[in-house]
Image (cartoon, rainbow, N blue to C red; front, side, top):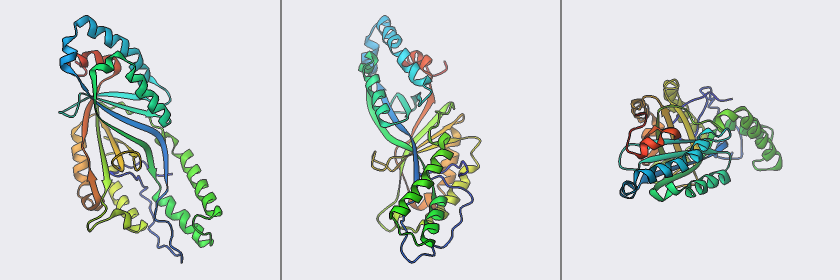
Length: 300
């Protein structure tokens, strides 16, 4: 089982990685194994303030009261939660983060929210779809090398059976990390990212052992922040415009800056990382949304 590390790209690796030379004659697959868990949807919303303010106080209260049972139930779900945040800056007013067991459940969340009368006053400005992902660099290297040493050809039935056995074992061992609860921290920082490809640098053309080395060094930085920041990495290749989504949760937002700034100086980030827009929000429980919709800060 891997140690719980904090990294900046979609692969979390153990500090015990062994960078063994591949002693096989046939090329081994370059793709590291991954295990997947919760489906994740981020929704960034803007409140249509002029239309909202044009409503009378009674009508605003009625819309909030109608929405609260639905939002509260989403927040309290035992099998996949939602969390709500007041966004800072011009990128929106609300950030809704949904963890669910599958994509059908995410679709149900969207439809349920759209049925609320309050939805008439919320304008979607961005969204992001992904799935919680843990990378298995160490396990991948070990199982690939073991199978090659036994003369088992890549992608043969024996190979595929052994790979599935490894994945099943890792899924079971990492289940709490694959299907996490939304951390209760007061602040969230979400951003999408890619690994550079093209021009003179291409992450995907590096040998697996070199990628593992860089991710190992990258993870060592995050380990120093493990008590201050909780990170959830989600994969979005084939699902959205970037390759990974990164959620950071903390009670002090300045730690986001310190962690990400320090990571900028390691090789994998300095050379290969590309970043999308950053979204920072303050946790706003469903029961406090009435205040937020009346332009009061969370916790006021």
